[in-house]
Image (tube, rainbow over all chains, first blue to last red):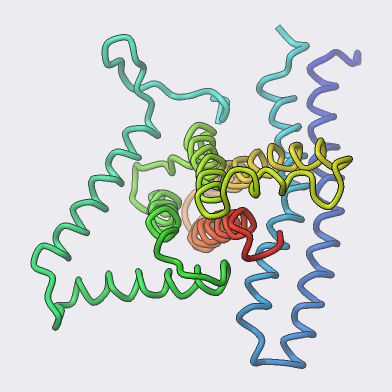
Length: 82
Length: 222
């Protein structure tokens, strides 16, 4: 079996998504755990906390979405394939 | 599944201008929202009917949320932010209607919305602080950071666009794959998840736009 450019692109896309999802998943888990802890301590501050949590999660998630964009570029708009 | 999510699907041509499916969906959503507002506020009264009450609740909740984020009078910013949120909720949830696809799942619509946010942030900032004071924001805390500040303007707009696009588009993909694997009942929980994702993404987009505007008018740090 010979590795050509298309197969390498598919493998690259899979690797990009899998590794790109791992880091943000760990980070989001830590952020949510910290927010839950804070809400459990101070239930009255749940409103501002959850809003900040959502904004922070969106920021963390951006990393995963960048990897998704790279994977999509590799699969659908690859500059090295025809 | 075979078509690329980055390529537009052209429905018809209006003269030389190609009209794609997301544009038509956007027009339909705009028509529905306009009709809803017109119906609700055709005879606005102090003792409102059901629809007017619902609209007032929506607007006042949005105003309260925006006030909490930018910590000043929300009404100059509410026409933009409220319209963004309501439009995004309708656009992200349009997949619930059979045969419709969310226009935010193609890259043009999020790109246009992010461009609107990008421009309006500067307009609001200059209007509330003056040009010089607003421009001074970029050399703070140190003129050495000017390139980084400019770069962060660009990347945060880009990530605003890609976040919305990536979430909606990837959800469409997941639904398509699940339908391909097991047709009848399995997609339903994923579709329920899609409703949640759509509303959360609309909320995040609006909150981030509000945070950017709040940072530009100088009331909050971001």
